[in-house]
Image 1 (cartoon, one colour):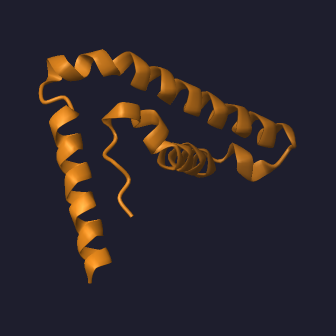
Image 2: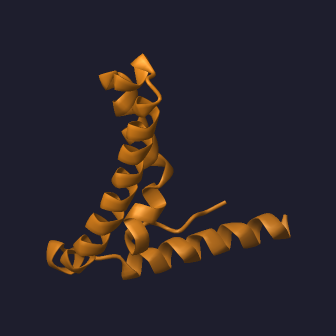
Length: 93
């Protein structure tokens, strides 16, 4: 019981600290946009290069809109914490 209570306390503390440091207004969040844009661009360029490499192999399904959409969505979801950087909430186990 003590370990569980300690973990809950740490979770609450991490969320409280994140809530205090995250930007509250659009003006405060504006300074993070160049970094978020750069990270998003890096992730999407990697996804595009993967799609080009798969299409170069001559696979017909690689040119499908739905396959490309799934690849882009998968990359975004996979690297979401990287993209959000300091704006992402703490990872709680």
